[in-house]
Length: 244
Image 1: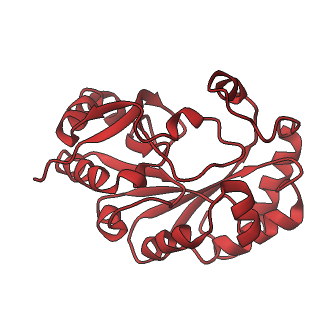
Image 2: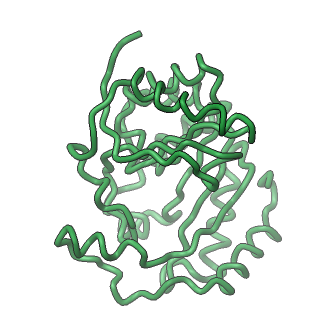
């Protein structure tokens, strides 16, 4: 197998929300997007983190297999953006499948590499939908939706199961109209098992201060949980052909 080293930001050994069961969560270094609410700006620079080979990484993951296997868990590759290191991700996924490990990628769908091949070895895609409107997507991420749509096409042609995640931001996406637009957009995505609305929070603001970076939503308060629950209820009641 071809050796292609990559850069990892960190590894969490007991993830409970990043896929089914207990997960080992591997955070990749590097991201193309510059989301206004990102709580991990320290993962943006692809030159950060530590250098590792696919084999070395999978050997680390295998140490925790006895724990996550009991709960029908597995490994989730997150970021940053794991697709940005597509070749490294692909080789790591192949090794995981050789070792009978359930694989998931937590992604915004903007990276590099052969998405078709990557998805062949991916059991679950946790897809972060930033916004469904072209201009609002660019306002939030600093990028166009072109790469996201390219990944979405490959995803619909794959056999991977899909979970949708969407961060609800006060004053931007925290209203019924925006949530219904999201719900309609999701109808065009195949094999969706779950839709999760995530609350905007300010827990990562201190990282911007530490990195001497401007935080662009500094006047936005944390998302109200009661309002978020109501919006989640709207998704559930209007799911149409979404298989959640």
